[in-house]
Image 1: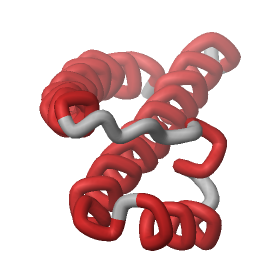
Image 2: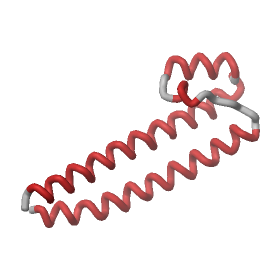
Image 3: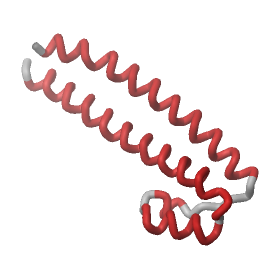
Image 4: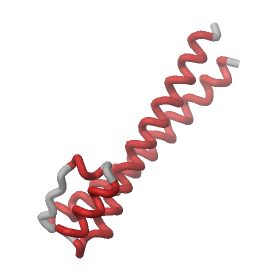
Length: 99
């Protein structure tokens, strides 16, 4: 059984790598647009939905959709990284302790 799990890890790592590259390309494009528009964002507000929406509506209402898309992509990237790390960690722990 550990050998089957080890065959699961390699495609999982490759899939997570592809998803990471995809989200980074999206984030770089959106970040480039935000920098061209001279939009300055406090990184602390990106993860707090209520503060983020209030800040964007007050300071940058014309770019609210772009800012929401940027913060959503960043949140998804962080979520996928954490989930992927936990899946790989659990797989390796299972392989290690089942021997």
